[in-house]
Length: 395
Image 1 (cartoon, rainbow, N blue to C red):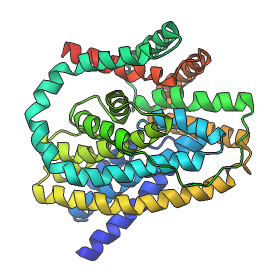
Image 2: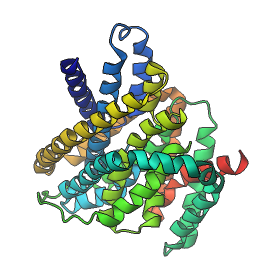
Image 3: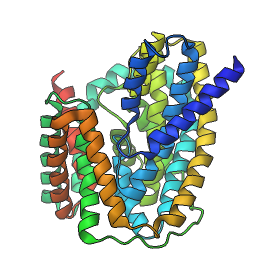
Image 4: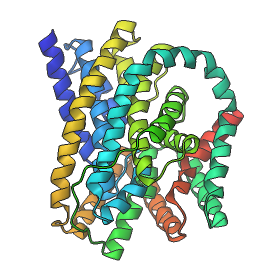
């Protein structure tokens, strides 16, 4: 059985590399496919092996998905915020450093998850109801802080409200995976179009080990990620915003924070499944559908797989980033951007059909307009924050 477990873990890592490197492919989509296959093709496979495969794939994905986000400006629904400082560092020749920072954040998150998993379960069980009751006011406070830090406050408020209205409209449409076209348009294709229009040139990339300042970003991730993992409607993006508000850090520290929150939110979604039988990620949904309930022994196996996968994924991501950074300035960035834009359009159509393409188009133009106002693109997170605030105010 041990050989089979190792085999499925390695297979999951391989699949996580593939999903992480392809722009627009989110782990929730893969989880949906796995659920449909588990009742047919995977029927004869031991469900424990499938759980190991899913965990390995999901954790690997949280490491690798920063590569297209930073090199191409194409986020998925968990890495949209990494585009902001990451793409800027790419244009300064520091893409390798940017990816290294997110990767060290993810590796730190795996270790932190193992250490605090069981203590956090006790704490969350005691304060879960209280956090749920004050959550909308907490998010309102965070939103006010984000806007007040801007020099052009009225423009920032306008961007926040505009994208919030867009988010509300999209989430009330009957679209498949509505966040895919929404966030891909706002944070991905809008930047690609800008790069194509401005004829962005990528300078030679510097391969250097980053100076790590982990304490402040990891503190924010530790506080925010468990809360966002246990509450519906919140994910890595909101966790990063909350974490950065709690423990303010700089541009490079923010990359550590978003790397850590991305992995921690995924890891805590498995704990959430065990503790309150709620699914917060596509991977957790897949495990729930396959296993029904998660026992303590299964949770321990999941945590062991997370640790092993995290260590392996760290070295894979660092080495892939080094290879790509060395070749990036030799690539025709305009052609690469056009190709990537075509891939995104194709994925949006395949996943969300014509309605998704319409959302994608509107979101792209909205993103381009918001970028032209010269305020921080974090204000476009209104597309998620405003719907979440309204949801919790009126439940």
